[in-house]
Structures are given as C-alpha cells and as structure tokens.
Image 1 (spheres, one colour):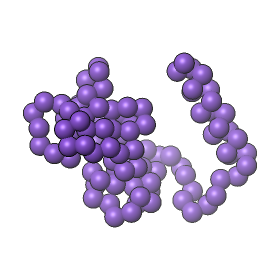
Image 2 (tube, helix red, strand yellow):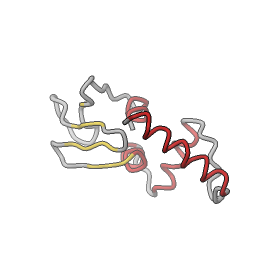
Image 3 (cartoon, rainbow, N blue to C red):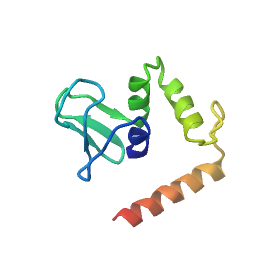
Image 4 (spheres, helix red, strand yellow):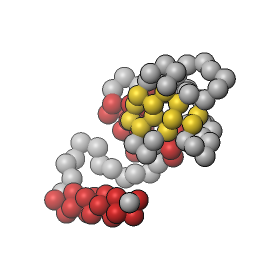
Length: 102
C-alpha cells in the first residue's frame, strides 16, 4: 500500500500518516497500513485496488488491477488463472513475509 501511495505522490511520515487524497485538509488524517489506507477525517477505507480505482477514477476494480500491473511491472496475466505451482509459490512468499514481520 505504501509503495502505491508514494507512487501517487503522497508524502507519508514515519508514523504512516499522510494527507488524505480524497478530501481537502491541511493536517494529515489518513493512515497507511500495510494492506490499506484509512482516513479518520472522511472515513474512507480502501485497499490498494480500491485506492488505485478511486484516485484514478477507474470504473471497475479490474481496471485498477490492470493499471497496477502495468505501472509496477507485475507481469500478471490478466484473465488467466494461476497454476497450482504459482499459487504454492505465492503462499510460500506470504508465509515467509509473515514470519519475517513477526
């Protein structure tokens, strides 16, 4: 979430706070969490796909996925289901990340 938010020009302080891009404010009221953004001012709560969809005015979540795929070079084949091996590798990476963060 942080990488995408910073890529959209948000300045995030060391506590994870930033100005909310969805309403005008002078004091940061939005908090960047690992998986989402929550604004304590306007109440918006979005994950990375919802954030991308909202900030770029995209109609559908899949449009946000395509934009993230292109902008960050994720090389995801849209419309193709992942293989069992790819799912296993992803789950392994998620587990390793979780163990590292704990």
